[in-house]
Amino acid sequence: QRQQQQQQQQQQQQQQQQQQQQQQQQQQATVAAVQQSTSQQATQAASG
Image (cartoon, rainbow, N blue to C red; front, side, top):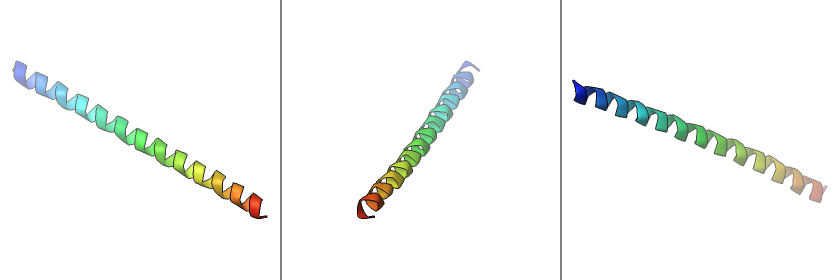
C-alpha cells in the first residue's frame, strides 16, 4: 500500500511539470508574434 501511494504522488508531480512547459511555450509564441509585428511596422515606416 505504501508503494502505491508513492507512485501516485510521482505521477501528479510529472503532470504539473508538463503544464508548466506548455505555458512557457505559449508565452514564447506570443513574444515572437509581438516582435514580428513591431519589426514590420519599423520597416514600413522606413520605406514609407
